[in-house]
Length: 215
Image (tube, rainbow, N blue to C red; front, top):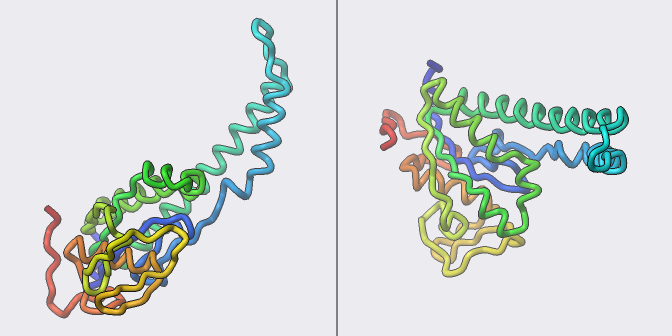
């Protein structure tokens, strides 16, 4: 068991940053592992296609080599994503007693045309790493339904009449006047919905406050 820290955290997943947090020091930038190796993957894919044997013919050594190189490149990307996810999750869990996490839904990003970038960010794998690390170290990790998180104000709780388009990166509350980056506001909404709203924006719990067990 890790020592108590008195800190709570909200996590919002995205495509500009893999994770935007209520603590700026813990944001997870998008490493774009897949994009960095795109040239290699394209080359190996073309090699495989050109050397693919016709039906009934045995695969050539060149074809087998091309498939091996392509598979090796994909395995490297997977290892890089997994390593980055585990290191980030460990730091998050070490520094916080309770974490409110957006319950990421890949289908939503697929509808917005952001599925490819979300896959490269490996948001699903990063979320899973955080859940597993939280369980391992006895932290209170609470999943938050993502509906309307971009419409609610993380300060006063008011809801806008219309959802923000993805191109709009600043949230402005028409009720209390709060202005903040869109994803940072959503991260604060996670804390509120999870019942972990802190006393201040840095995520510090009031002295003596007790964390309730998740239902």
